Image (cartoon, rainbow, N blue to C red; front, top):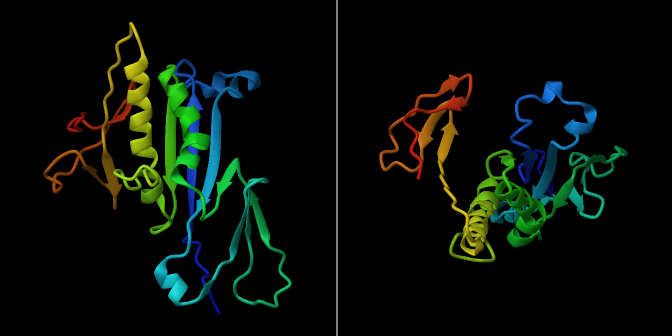
Length: 212
């Protein structure tokens, strides 16, 4: 049995929810008010890929869903007396987790809050190959494998279709930051690079960014 020493099967998703009235003034907030600004860290572990299975890699990560813990053991020496390292998060999902369960349990409450006027952010982080794209995009034409983005679109527009006596404006930008360059993924010409600007009132913006 071989053991992989790289943590290439773990992706981290941060969920941030804050009131638009308190955004940017966290330093002036009391401890009581600051508790209303919620950041949750969720970890999802992907299954081994075909290459890893053929090479008979040993799984060194275990997941305790109930306790929200990731347990990592030393892969270098099976007889090692090293105590496994335990990391606790707000939620954890193992390689058997389903896209819709992840969305309903972690992201749906955030989108519901956004529809009430709060600001929300979903930030996925991890090495190449950890499953970030699958978690965020998935397979759009497959209901069981759709990711966060298409599920959130359906969530938002279903809410709008059921609303009465209200008007909604939905805008979307789709950018990629890669090797310190920014691309607008909604443009046909992907060779075009965007310029980033910072404004005191709006923060970071791109003048040429397309919104649909």
